[in-house]
Image 1 (cartoon, rainbow, N blue to C red):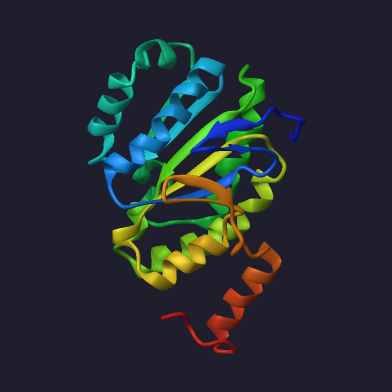
Image 2: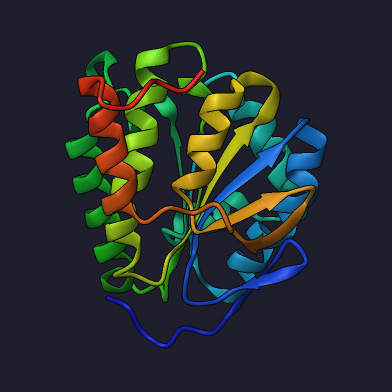
Length: 215
């Protein structure tokens, strides 16, 4: 449920009422330089942390959190830290189901306060979609649709994209589905954001050929 939650310091600015962010990075070092203060602050504030990474990233991700001084064992014991792989979160049964994921995130957001946490700081690494155009197309549509879920909750949701892994057309559409953006390491309001009703109408028109596909 949406409340008058306090702003969250992040990437040289603040997350206020709107908290669905696409974060573009060129390297892992740049990525963690920006993300770790936000993640560490969340643990200190008593927020729940939900992270989604690829299986290959799992060990490195945990090592970076530990090196930042986060006591992961204690956080897990009190239910404050949840780590999932992208296969567990997004690709159950080997496919990406938008409707299932909308339900998953709604349940996650609704359960945060019930579990005793003021909000969740959700960090999702999205490179799992980069190697399959069908995944990219479905993910972009989902990113637009899920704005409805996040508009009703206080959770901060950071969708992390490795710029070298996504084509220009995909990056443009990803930008258009997030009201907030991090680029160059700085959080800002996204001037390219397109409301879901307009963006999803364009998606349907592309599928029917009424609009040309992006290149």
